[in-house]
Each structure stands twice: as structure tokens, then as C-alpha cells.
Image (cartoon, rainbow, N blue to C red; front, top):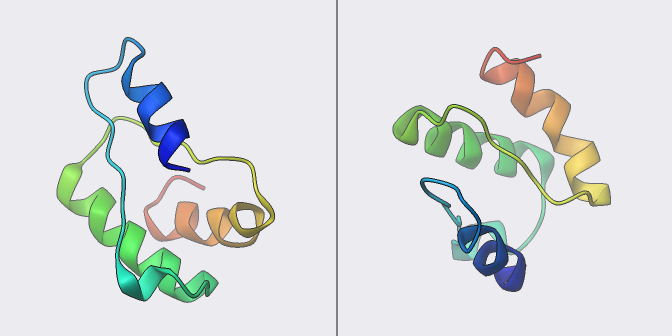
Length: 70
């Protein structure tokens, strides 16, 4: 995943945020949603994207609803 963030940062984008925390190492949809909602509220990005992974399919719809982007 770090390689993806580095590759994306090399593109023509204003900023890339990479979220890392020990509490995010063990996946739970609720945990990821709470953490990412805080990042989105703080950073106020115009848009955000994720790698296509099984976990993302699990939490992304809930996160989108939580931040009003569903």
C-alpha cells in the first residue's frame, strides 16, 4: 500500500494523505469508518479514493453514508 501512496503522490495531485495507526492494523469496518471519518472531517478533501480490496467493499458504503457522500 505504501508503494501505491508513493505512486499517487508522484501524479498531478495537490496532496496525498496516507493514514497509518497501530489501531488500524487489525481490520474492522467500524474502526476504519470512525478513523477515516475523522481524517475526512479534518482534511476536508474534495474527493478521496481507496484501493479496490475486499475490505474497502466492506466499509466504503458505510463511510460514504457517514460523511454524506452516499
